[in-house]
Image 1 (cartoon, each protein chain N blue to C red):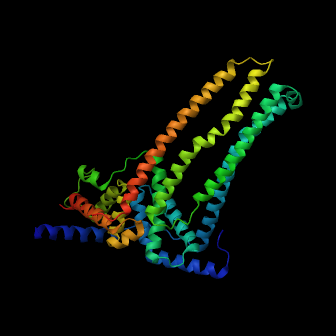
Image 2 (cartoon, each protein chain N blue to C red; image 1 turned 180 degrees about the vertical axis):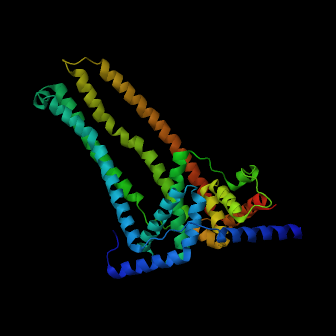
Image 3 (tube, chains in turn orange, purple; image 1 turned 90 degrees about the vertical axis):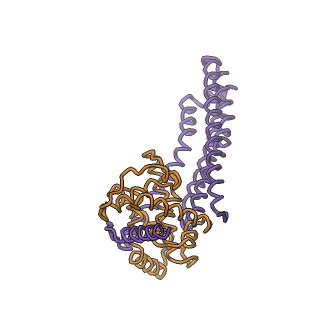
Length: 175
Length: 205
């Protein structure tokens, strides 16, 4: 282990508790949108928590805690997706491709919230990593600059992708 | 148009509310549980790195063991035996280099994981590309050793002559060239992916 000093260890634990309180639900949503299987969701969420906990050993306030958490969590999810694609040979699509494809499940006019949420998860799971991350962070309420900070792509490109994400959401859930 | 914008706004607000309000399974772990899991993860990573190293060393160790089984002192007394032994030593040295290289590679794979997503993704892709590029060179290091073992085997008066070494050399060269081409194609595909991702960094609208 890299962290042994008791003071640093205490700080690391405190930061972890703060993270769980502030971002616990967002992390669970990220996992639900990444993996369908409940048991795998549990493992992935635990892996993300471990990755975040380990990353605190080198966190010195280089960026906001929110940006840091999203970076580490999305990195862990991206690694997981890469592995699971190799296993299942899933075909992921870009926002542009998905706009052209007819929805797998037709959105019902009277679909209840649970159904809509499941359709949303299903849509996100089909997206390629960067597009998926933009969509997830956009739904979490981050603006283009915040998303650019997490992903490391230009705010202009993020704005373009947000525009496409909105169009896709409108197309799938607008009626 | 205003009606359309209004609809967009409503859909967006509604989806965000559903997204944030939806039920999610949220197990909780204490810092101690997470610390224990992290320790287990690091121990597993160390075990995998060790297994990689042993895998590299195993092949020449088997070759050297075979040389002893074949009565090494007697072998060293003959010119063909000395050539075979030199080849086995070369193979052994190459695999030690390979083990050190793989150890360095697996160490590089353990990072803080806190770069921005694109940087981490590019780092992973670049590492994989470098691996594809360097593997043919690394494998080429084994060729002289393997060549000497085959020449020695061909020169062995008690052996079956040159037929088998020539067949094995042909197979080895074919497999080597095929894997070189495959690695080159994979490295190029990765480079294309890296270039397209690098383009996302530029400010373009």
